[in-house]
Length: 248
Image (cartoon, rainbow, N blue to C red):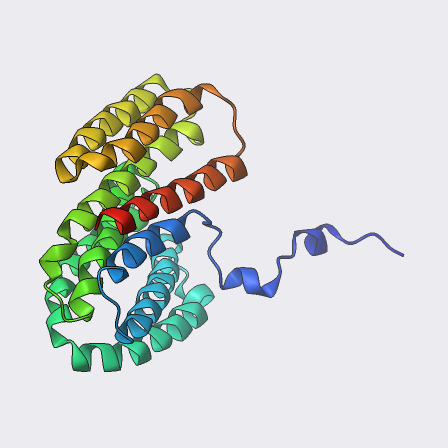
């Protein structure tokens, strides 16, 4: 049998064109959503989840179009995910029009993402913080979807944001900026502040956030592979979710 050509060896499965190669992002997308849903469930949360995930996928490929200036390469993904998100949004916003009050905040954060993509700074810490802020809003949108006061999700959203924003700095110190003293110090300093903020939300949150601080301080001195870094953060997300379910 002839050896595959170099082009064939680089060929990617078709499904990879439809799923972003960012495995850690799923924890960011699901943690605040699940933490908010546990405050009160309604069948409309199914629509909310579809809108949220397909909308994020559509925005991912739209931002790739902005970055590369090659919209023809990604129009199928943008169209398909956009249609799915729009279809799921119809019953959601028809029955919960109050959710549209969150739209301006999303618009501002998406504008930050768009500008960052256009100037080639999509991996900048500020852009990452904008993304996790958008995700953290789901902890307030979820109870509002169940016709509860959205403010009951504020403490949960803050806890999610403190953890997810911390991962922006921590993961950078573990991978792209591994060995950078300045990035390491920023990450540790943020986690010290996150611990204080979490305790202000609920004293019991000191337990998971003390661990998050410890891993931010200790693990960058190791040489962990990317899959290991990701696996640890999946466990950390589940740990925080468990605390949020128990406490709120």
